[in-house]
Image (cartoon, rainbow, N blue to C red; front, side, top):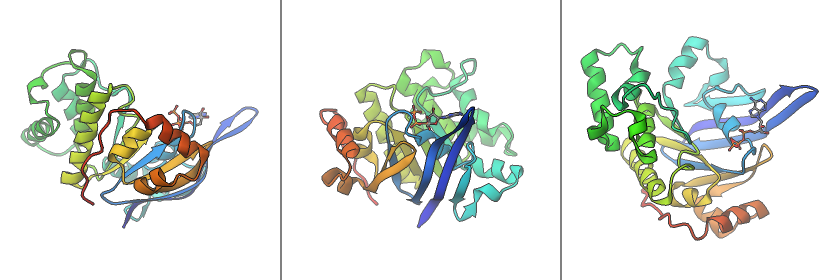
Length: 258
Ligand SMILES: Nc1ncnc2c1ncn2[C@@H]1O[C@H](COP(=O)(O)OP(=O)(O)OP(=O)(O)O)[C@@H](O)[C@H]1O
């Protein structure tokens, strides 16, 4: 069953003298509990497209349904609550440098009605989950890139989201650290049933982790299907190019149970 359903999404950016179409007539269904990859070069429209899911980017046209709820019809208050159920992680981690690891993870719970004890128990549980219990009182500058991304993942999970959007989250990491972060994402998907949307320009990341993939070019999806099918029978030249580029990277395929 689809958890996310995008229908005929257009995003135009108004810019003198005209408007720039960043996303053009994209329709996409993402199943609950799956890992879905979106691949494309810089400027293809990947970030703009996924930002329409939580309406950080309101589409110029089209429908955005999450869990059968039309997001574009929600009031600001309703939207705020829905957004809490969609976590995001980014290439540059976006941590607050003046806060400790623990404080960074607590941040999304600031307005929660839970007691301080409950909030701290939640943070402790998340630290365990991402393997950073010993670093709770460290500041981001005292952490490696992989550890920073683990903090960002824990923070993204603070409100028990249904969906995690990973926007180039491993692009700044070396292959070994990338493998470890992908293993963590796989573990979260398999144990929490978290639906994960991965944006990347690295097809080896998709091959290791995703079930389904969509290839984007100039604001459009030019090819989509199961990862196995697309890798075995790529239809588009660009898809073939991404597959060729992925060869030779030492990222291992992860064990996945549908
Ligand atoms: N706020 C904005 N105002 C105007 N144009 C924008 C804005 N955001 C994105 N664009 C344009 O929309 C197009 C798609 O950008 P987008 O960031 O979605 O691509 P991307 O595939 O995610 O690339 P990258 O990986 O480099 O972020 C690009 O041409 C970009 O310049």
